Image (cartoon, rainbow, N blue to C red; front, side):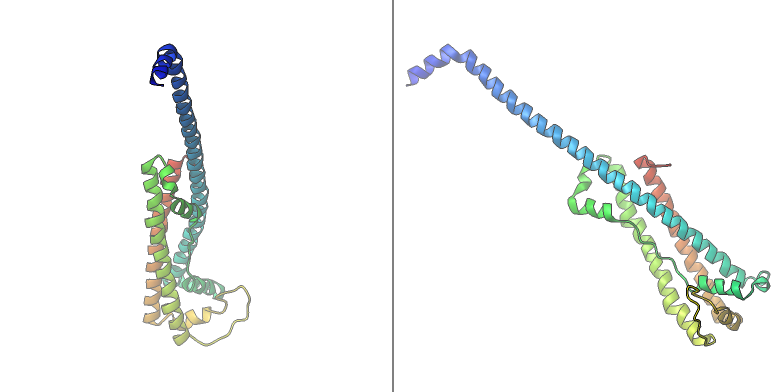
Length: 234
């Protein structure tokens, strides 16, 4: 048996080596093809994630711009009511708008679907630019939570401080005008504008809104920086 095997090896060794090379080459090509396909899939998945981030971040940026404009309008409106040079020019409708800004607050809800999927599926390993990945994580883990925190600060101040004070110290009245949140609230402002506590609360209202705007401004800068890195600036 061993003699026959040795004879076969001596006689057909070149063929056997060739066949071995063919087998090894076939396996190597199979693995290489599998790696190539996986690489293409990973690149496509990476692009899908980046495209998703770009779309959602751009949408968030547009919403933030609207919130910033609303905050700036609120600040200008409240300041006009506190400024003795502009206060005489405010009629009942203007004071209603002032109180609408005083008793209103902004609430920004970021888009997190793509980031949630990235975290749940471990897709972060597909992002080859790790500096870019770091900026993405910072946006969702630091900048967005800061905005949420300031939203809560403003909302709590309005609901826990402004409304109770107005309800306790302002004149009682009932408004039935649908869609006009502060309709008739000019009477509240006129009744309370000489009250030092009320004016101090308005100044605190301004301070909290300014803090919220500053956080939104920094968030805008963070989104712009990230969109540049994603190559999605317009």
